[in-house]
Image (cartoon, rainbow, N blue to C red; front, side, top):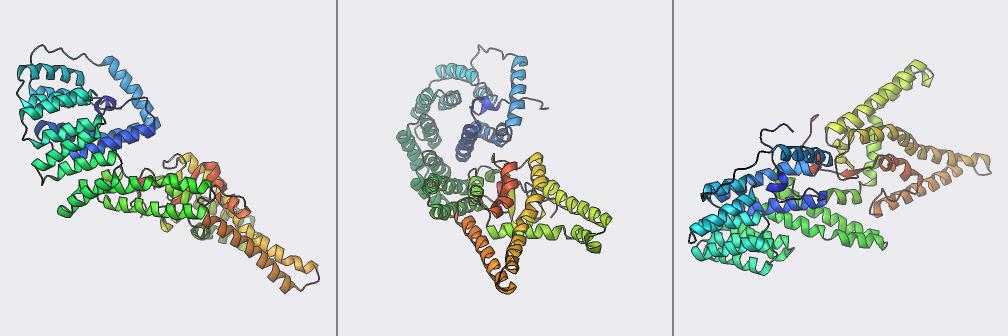
Length: 488
């Protein structure tokens, strides 16, 4: 990692290297949401410090949530710590600016020790208690942070920002009632400050008190319709409240009530889409919304008819090659071989290269609004796309072989006493009944991928099972796409 100054994200963002991906994601999302509310209310050096910390979170997210990138980063961090020069011990009383700089650098213990000296030297200076509280907060000594914040309030009881700080530290210490009380005091002192209301909403969100959070955010949006932080918070409320219903879906599915489960899944997906629309004009905010969206899309799958239509379009896409293969009724070996190469080249280019370059969307999936997603909630790797592309042609022909079998079955009547027309009608009816059952089966189960007992279903979805990928419904604002549309 070629950077001039190495950044210790764990230290600066109060994370732990041994946390798993889900816990890191939640901690980063919580930090992003919390800092976003406080940026609007903080002043001077504290605002600069919070803004700098906020800017680190998207960068940390891209590294720490990618297992390979995190492993490389951890190695470089360990090497940096071994070669890091020691910080000089300061015996003198530090200034406020020096303490804020120590916090910016992640030297929380130095800031705590320096802050202790400063408050002892100037015990009536609320600014000294303010920075001392902040240093203890980032050092995870929440009780001392709360005590220092309360001392700052005693020094300057009319400054609303100090009550907001105390609320933040109390929330970190899980003293929720006291945190709410302090933030309400800040709102009483500055009733028109939307930042304090959003800080309070952030606490409600963290504590999953959705109704109170929504009421506060709606109040802010009624006065400031373009407030991007309020829209982000509303998106979080909509998304997280919908996410809570996923357990209900699992319960219904396990009890055999797939129809009800699917209905609720569609409602959840609509909520997720509504949340994305609220932050669609801010790519950074979009990245922090929708962690569960891909899972719900996977469960819903793609409509059976879209699947079949996509298969047909794949056939049309390769029609030039099929036309070559049909020259002289297929007896021209050179044309047949050349046509097969053209077909495979077209499919390979679309299914592998375009899909890899466009976030899991090949030409047909881009056209139909579908997307390939890896089972581990990431974009498909090149290896997965190649595996799909190698297996898919076999499934392609097997899927259409069903129709051939219907015709063959309809011809069995030639061997019996019935006329060929009657037997063909009976054979076609039986064959279409099987396809109808397959369609019914696919549409009313929570996921097509987990119910593949029929021939047609196995043919259509086997390449996904082997390559550990899923085709899901997609849209232009889907965070998994990263706005990659190179060929449109």
